[in-house]
Image (cartoon, rainbow, N blue to C red; front, side, top):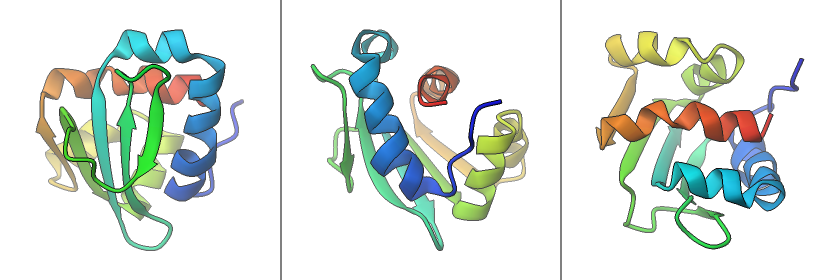
Length: 115
Protein backbone atom coordinates (compact mmCIF):
# COMPACT_ATOMS: atom_id res chain seq x y z
CA UNK A 1 0.00 0.00 0.00
CA UNK A 2 1.40 3.39 -1.00
CA UNK A 3 2.13 5.85 1.77
CA UNK A 4 -0.30 8.76 1.69
CA UNK A 5 1.33 12.19 2.15
CA UNK A 6 0.60 13.95 5.43
CA UNK A 7 -0.53 17.10 3.67
CA UNK A 8 -0.47 19.01 0.39
CA UNK A 9 2.88 20.59 1.28
CA UNK A 10 4.47 17.14 1.63
CA UNK A 11 2.91 16.08 -1.68
CA UNK A 12 3.87 19.12 -3.77
CA UNK A 13 7.18 20.06 -2.11
CA UNK A 14 8.62 16.54 -1.78
CA UNK A 15 6.66 13.63 -3.30
CA UNK A 16 5.64 15.04 -6.71
CA UNK A 17 9.05 16.66 -7.44
CA UNK A 18 10.76 13.33 -6.58
CA UNK A 19 8.36 11.46 -8.88
CA UNK A 20 8.98 13.93 -11.71
CA UNK A 21 12.73 13.42 -11.37
CA UNK A 22 12.25 9.66 -11.40
CA UNK A 23 9.68 9.48 -14.24
CA UNK A 24 10.07 12.63 -16.41
CA UNK A 25 8.93 10.87 -19.59
CA UNK A 26 5.74 9.51 -18.01
CA UNK A 27 5.00 12.95 -16.56
CA UNK A 28 5.49 14.63 -19.96
CA UNK A 29 3.05 12.12 -21.50
CA UNK A 30 0.35 13.81 -19.39
CA UNK A 31 1.57 17.05 -21.00
CA UNK A 32 -0.39 19.72 -19.15
CA UNK A 33 0.10 22.60 -16.73
CA UNK A 34 -1.94 22.34 -13.52
CA UNK A 35 -2.55 24.86 -10.76
CA UNK A 36 -3.47 23.63 -7.29
CA UNK A 37 -4.98 26.05 -4.80
CA UNK A 38 -5.30 24.16 -1.53
CA UNK A 39 -6.89 26.31 1.19
CA UNK A 40 -6.42 25.85 4.92
CA UNK A 41 -3.77 24.46 7.24
CA UNK A 42 -1.12 22.45 5.37
CA UNK A 43 -2.22 23.82 2.01
CA UNK A 44 -0.75 26.27 -0.46
CA UNK A 45 -0.62 27.14 -4.15
CA UNK A 46 1.49 25.21 -6.65
CA UNK A 47 1.97 25.12 -10.41
CA UNK A 48 2.78 21.67 -11.79
CA UNK A 49 4.20 22.00 -15.31
CA UNK A 50 4.23 18.63 -17.08
CA UNK A 51 5.03 20.24 -20.44
CA UNK A 52 8.46 21.47 -19.29
CA UNK A 53 11.64 19.49 -19.89
CA UNK A 54 12.20 18.41 -17.17
CA UNK A 55 8.69 18.65 -15.63
CA UNK A 56 8.54 20.99 -12.62
CA UNK A 57 6.58 21.87 -9.49
CA UNK A 58 6.85 25.46 -8.33
CA UNK A 59 5.37 27.53 -5.53
CA UNK A 60 2.63 29.94 -6.48
CA UNK A 61 0.55 30.64 -9.57
CA UNK A 62 2.75 30.99 -12.67
CA UNK A 63 -0.24 32.19 -14.70
CA UNK A 64 -0.07 29.49 -17.39
CA UNK A 65 -2.29 26.73 -15.98
CA UNK A 66 -4.51 24.81 -18.38
CA UNK A 67 -6.47 23.26 -15.51
CA UNK A 68 -6.95 24.68 -12.00
CA UNK A 69 -8.11 22.86 -8.87
CA UNK A 70 -9.41 24.71 -5.83
CA UNK A 71 -10.24 22.73 -2.71
CA UNK A 72 -10.03 22.85 1.08
CA UNK A 73 -7.06 20.96 2.51
CA UNK A 74 -9.22 18.56 4.54
CA UNK A 75 -11.14 17.59 1.39
CA UNK A 76 -7.89 17.30 -0.60
CA UNK A 77 -6.52 14.84 1.98
CA UNK A 78 -9.66 12.70 1.52
CA UNK A 79 -9.00 12.67 -2.23
CA UNK A 80 -5.44 11.45 -1.63
CA UNK A 81 -6.61 8.47 0.40
CA UNK A 82 -9.63 7.79 -1.84
CA UNK A 83 -9.30 9.17 -5.41
CA UNK A 84 -12.97 8.43 -6.09
CA UNK A 85 -13.82 11.23 -3.63
CA UNK A 86 -12.80 13.76 -6.29
CA UNK A 87 -16.03 13.35 -8.24
CA UNK A 88 -18.11 13.39 -5.07
CA UNK A 89 -16.43 16.59 -3.84
CA UNK A 90 -16.84 18.13 -7.27
CA UNK A 91 -20.58 17.46 -7.34
CA UNK A 92 -20.90 18.74 -3.76
CA UNK A 93 -19.28 22.00 -4.88
CA UNK A 94 -16.27 21.44 -2.59
CA UNK A 95 -13.83 20.90 -5.46
CA UNK A 96 -13.71 23.59 -8.12
CA UNK A 97 -12.12 22.72 -11.48
CA UNK A 98 -11.56 25.45 -14.06
CA UNK A 99 -9.91 25.25 -17.46
CA UNK A 100 -9.85 22.05 -19.50
CA UNK A 101 -11.90 19.41 -17.62
CA UNK A 102 -10.40 16.60 -19.72
CA UNK A 103 -7.03 17.35 -18.14
CA UNK A 104 -8.56 16.67 -14.71
CA UNK A 105 -9.06 13.05 -15.74
CA UNK A 106 -5.31 12.66 -16.36
CA UNK A 107 -4.43 13.80 -12.87
CA UNK A 108 -4.70 10.32 -11.37
CA UNK A 109 -1.68 9.33 -13.50
CA UNK A 110 0.39 12.07 -11.86
CA UNK A 111 -0.50 10.98 -8.35
CA UNK A 112 0.19 7.34 -9.23
CA UNK A 113 3.74 8.36 -10.20
CA UNK A 114 4.28 9.92 -6.79
CA UNK A 115 2.79 6.99 -4.83
